[in-house]
Length: 457
Ligand SMILES: Cc1cc2nc3c(=O)[nH]c(=O)nc-3n(C[C@H](O)[C@H](O)[C@H](O)COP(=O)(O)OP(=O)(O)OC[C@H]3O[C@@H](n4cnc5c(N)ncnc54)[C@H](O)[C@@H]3O)c2cc1C
Image (cartoon, rainbow, N blue to C red):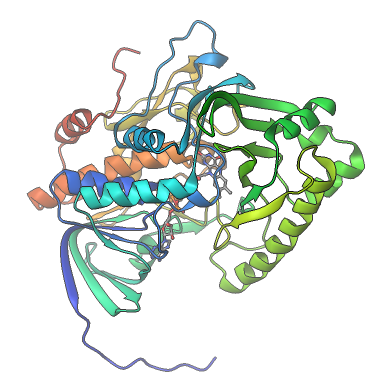
């Protein structure tokens, strides 16, 4: 391969207490928590809007509640509150959320469905970030990190305003891909254990028709009623099992990677229809991703044809929105001081350094937190091994596939964001490394800011 050595050049420096890289599911909440706790905070995001996969891929936000419906007699409790719930509250005011719609069938998977309007979410997140005094750098790509003796002293970004260095006392990697960690020399693995996806918003459809199709073929796994187009008690989620379809149709659905799960907060619109594609290599491979982007768009066309042909009330279905790039369920897995295990989750373990509690597992029929309870997310699971001022958050933590199927979900990611953002603000204030932060100090601030813990459960 031919190489060129870049010329040296002076780069302008911006200085912050805390820099959050990645304004997605996790990073929005991390930046809010950091700024609200007094840190001068920058949020750097490659795209022109906040939200990441919460607005590009996921069908509903799993999950703010414990699994009370799967464990009769267990008390119903909301286990994630704080900033994630504040976002929901504002979405509700703007008519952009189904509410925490109770599952009426299939509650071994989840007790509620919380579906959001992805476009309203973008505005809500922008407003909250502005109000909290976060400095926003949109359309800005992280390209490098400077690690001096186990401490990040700066990160380098590119945008149409040129190359810049952001210095800070503490950094949070919320890029999903673990870009800050990898560029700073942290240890990671690339597991490639999930398909990549491009989820489309589909207009000209009927969720009642989708439900009728499921009932007719005996495919119905799950449904819930919530607020849709401003009306309460409407269908907002229907989940069908393609495995029970006649063989030819089942194969067709499988080959195009179509997931028969829809959610909506508006009439005549499916917020997300997922199209999956399993790549041979990890989605950090640019050339392979290019091919996958093309393949996913071909599959989307086939899926629309399938929906028009087979689902009643969807004869005029059309693609109203697609994700600007394919989305991933994980790329790099970053080595942190603790790696949450499936046993921790199903045994409902709590740690001396819990930063929030959580209850949802994405394979609910197989794995559930014991007795409809919660497990704790330990602070050390967010601390990047070998680096003194960097947190990893979101889908990049937790190596085992089974445990990741819990920790990667949106509501856990949001809670991780609040924990890391709060901790980063406290560390930067006291000019201390992340491992020197006294747990009781962090816990007190999290409680003050509405994070739920359940001492007696
Ligand atoms: C198709 C799909 C469906 C899913 N369905 C559900 C579901 O129904 N319910 C659920 O709870 N969970 C679901 N999940 C899981 C969940 O949505 C994700 O795990 C979670 O949203 C990940 O959040 P994150 O903050 O880690 O990453 P993201 O939300 O992806 O945020 C990362 C952000 O970082 C930015 N970024 C990346 N690299 C850089 C860089 N170098 N410089 C600057 N910015 C950068 C990105 O643009 C993005 O905005 C789904 C995931 C996928 C892919």
